[in-house]
Image (cartoon, rainbow, N blue to C red; front, top):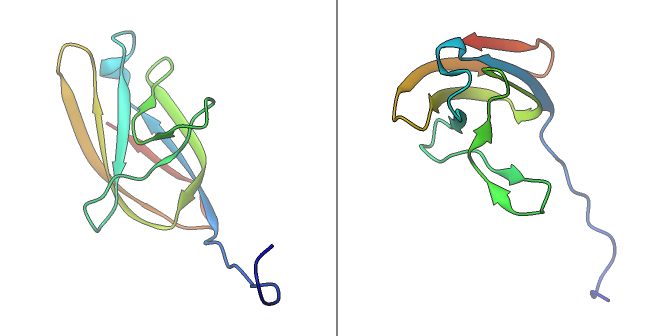
Length: 99
């Protein structure tokens, strides 16, 4: 039990983002989103571990919970091949990026 009354918490609006990296499909590809502050975006995986690298299934990753902002998207595969691009997310418009 914490002292005091309830505290309001304001979460940022969620944004939708689809990333396609067809040249990496089938080679254990993964993607990292890097914010304007240079830090990777993290979220909990199925095992409740914080992760910043997300799988590309068939060369595609879809998110519905990315914060609004400008992101550098870096995708790489097991061979070390890397592709990179930038995308802007906003709550009202789904964003898409093909690398």
